[in-house]
Figure 1 (cartoon, rainbow, N blue to C red):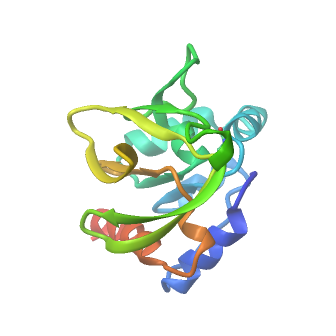
Figure 2 (figure 1 turned 90 degrees about the vertical axis):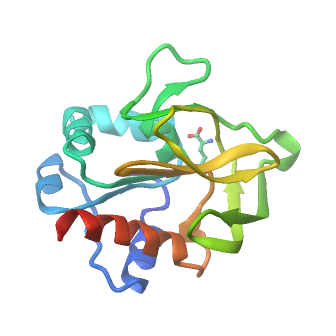
Figure 3 (figure 1 turned 135 degrees about the vertical axis):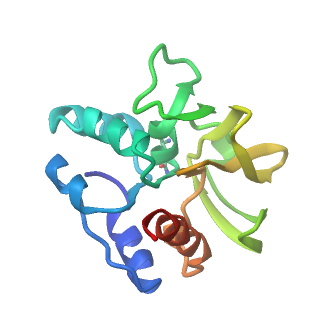
Amino acid sequence: MQGAVREHVQAIEACGAEAVVIKKKEQLANVVGLVMPGGESTAIRRLIDKYDFMNELKEFAQAGKPMFGTCAGLILLARNVVGYDEPHIGVMDVTVERNSFGRQRESFEANLTISGIAENYNAVFIRAPHIVNAGENVEILAKHHERIVMAREGNLLGCSFHPELTEDYRITAYFIEMIKETIV
Ligand code: GLN
């Protein structure tokens, strides 16, 4: 609805999978995984409410279908958001803090080692959140300067940065593998 939708579509197609842009909640019944893109979490949340998506999104996650939140998408998935009384979708057992890399570094690139996915991964951070706390079933996949920037909890994957903005498609390919595991 908002944010880096087109870039995710491109990354998914580059991995040989079919991407569908979701504009109506009814479409969720026809997809096997869902990417919540980066953008602005407050703006995306307004659109989720306006188009009455919230229950369907929660049910999608609770049904065990893979969801991948990137940047603002991670904020939407998180069970707790620092400074907010209520989460958004609130299905992933992590606490995130918004815009947590300081003003002077609002956008930057960093080289990450991502457990089981990539060494030397060049990650693009744009006013990025980070994971302050992760529940016991959450697998921490990457850190940047001791801060958690990528994690997985079962069918839920989240990262602080924007994997769709580079031509390194290893993370999108990993998410597609997660989906394949649920449909075979
Ligand atoms: N700062 C944004 C937010 O809080 C996230 C930025 C992004 O997705 N690149 O929603």
